[in-house]
Image (cartoon, rainbow, N blue to C red; front, side, top):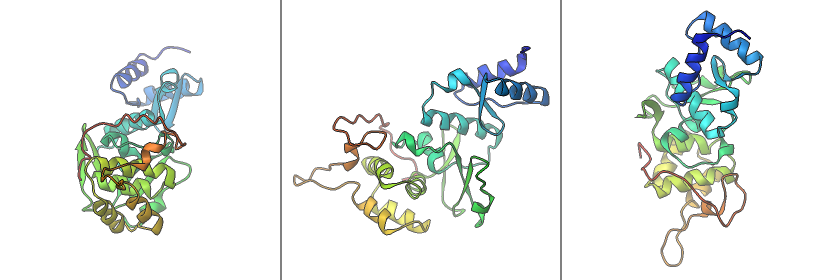
Length: 235
């Protein structure tokens, strides 16, 4: 395949910035499309590209972050939420939480009608006053909102680490419960999840049930978390 200087330069720059690459003109787009068809590149999202060899070294969380950073360059007005905002905000979660989609906040009540199984974009209807934070230059929903949106779409086992991490970083059950209520996603199952996230032992010390699970949600006595120590923004 003949070389295309511009495509190669864009790909190298994107990798240095830890994001996907995207074409800046029709010629570059054609070159990236050809390389994707040839197996040299992968395209995890329409218009986004990554070197296949490099992409295969990334975790699901890192891949999600690569797409978010690239899409922010293309769509600076988008506000990311749910799974797409977890890594940006440093909230501990299971790698299997990622479904390959990009999650953004949308203030239109019928936002979900624009979602299509053919495109990895999930528009989540959120109130216009839900609150936005800028982290590393990326606009995301406030931490409590991000957690509420995420756990509403996760099974109990994978939602537990999110609630546990939020509580360990200073959030309260009342804050998370109120956020779920405002988003109209509070169910008996979610209420149970929120209230079991940080029980007290007989000695009065907090003991977290999420520590009993590894990043795949399987029982483990030697779970090692690598969560950041910063507080969740917006809580």
